[in-house]
Length: 329
Image 1: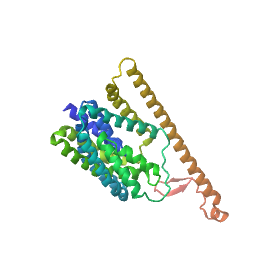
Image 2 (image 1 turned 60 degrees about the horizontal axis):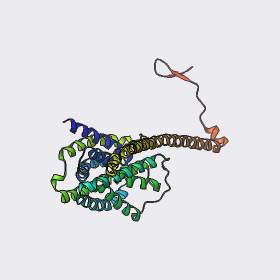
Image 3 (image 1 turned 120 degrees about the vertical axis):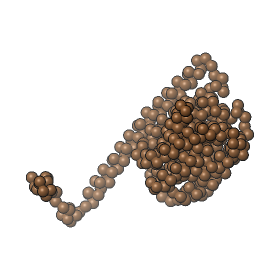
Image 4 (image 1 turned 120 degrees about the horizontal axis):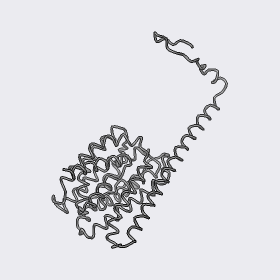
């Protein structure tokens, strides 16, 4: 029961992160299962089966908050499902000894990408226009394949690509990616079911992750509007890098002083990314404040004498009398 409770809390935290960033549920959950000694294929299969429920709850919540662009969802979901099914079939056919470093390497790379991505200012301006299907289709295919073979990766591949395009609001990017992931998770689960059978799914683990994720989904859809993605992305990226580095170091058979040196270097890189993320966040907020002040000043300077004359005079301070009627001081 203690382990299941911990897994439920992990599912809750992972869904909060995923709903706020549009990524990292699979990365976080799969990383934990690998550290706990679960076979790579079983870890990815269990996480994707749990994601069927969590992504459905997340999609409904994002839809209710107006965070979903259904055109984008329909154009990335089907290619993503095809890529996920192919990736699940491939991972099911690889031995555990070969799959462990492969999966850890994918997760490590995606975690490092998160560090680099969120250490820089995030582009949130929109240039107009619509995303074309010839861009969304290949993107979904690659993201789905990486997601199934790595135990996570749909969000880290799809979300930044859509954000960089500058043609969607960040909240709609996150909501659309999370909603499309329902189809991707279902296709990956079917692939693992064919390749591993029912015994490939750790059902108590699936249930614990599912419960935690469903509880967190509505809150995550709301948090996406207020949580600074800059800091959250850098923090999650560092955790994923450090935890998966353990498997890679073990596979490389690094011993002696080399192992702590590698960990120290990775920790220093994580700290540097956090510092840069804080600075980038401050610069972004400062730029937005200056832009708002400039816009207000420009509007005031364009107002003519007639506009100023028509403007209501500034009223003297008033206080409410006992009857509630405004009374001049």
